[in-house]
Length: 282
Ligand code: AMP
Image (tube, rainbow, N blue to C red; front, top):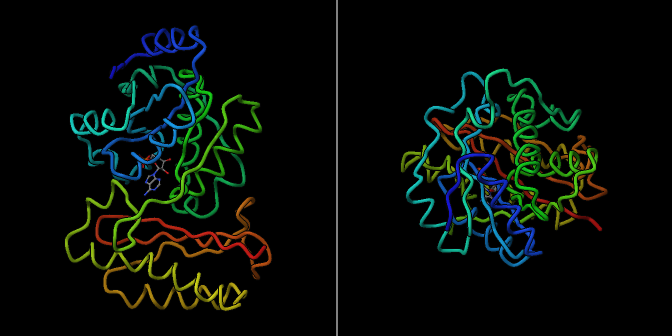
């Protein structure tokens, strides 16, 4: 497995693969890999000849009071895990390589970026869209795999790819969970043992929403109320948002008559956790 930290290096690596007529699958990550990430890589492996991942804690997607500096990092371990699932190359640039002095260009996917997580993280998706567009330009992948865990991010990246006529095919992977239902996340590391137990309320609440939906409930207000109560009863859990939105436009729904996403963000101790579930009445 190759580790490349500069743009010139990855470009010549990619050219050689393309010259052989092979396809490239890209999995962008911020590292501190877990089984969720590894499943995305396995999927990329199945869908392309060559898997490249990026490990880059992207400063532009963190707000001023967020966890950029303490975001967990373990590159040695990441290398081992990535190579165990057949990744051929890790692109691991330094921030100055991606954002050199004088850097001034950003991509803003309007509308979709200022709902849900965009309310409390107003510059987050501008940073995400910018770095992903740059990675697409640098690596020129045939496919790129993103997790449904970050559902809003997935919708925004798909919109950007369509709007800017990018050639890459965006593929999504379902949420990978721990045995007790907690969605895997690098940020779960911030949780104490007690908080870790409490954090299962996110998935329990989403499952409750799914159960209500299966039993015929279509009223968003009633679903949100039950979920809010469940989470508020769990000590130390602070709700950032609970929303039920259209799965494509991310606009708020009052009644679930088309494919919808129940999305939530909850702060527990030092961690802000997100999770979601798709409800499809069709
Ligand atoms: P991150 O390193 O958090 O930026 O995540 C990199 C990619 O992995 C994104 O496409 C995420 O949506 C995806 N991902 C992270 N956690 C999970 C999970 N538990 N299940 C599925 N995909 C995930």
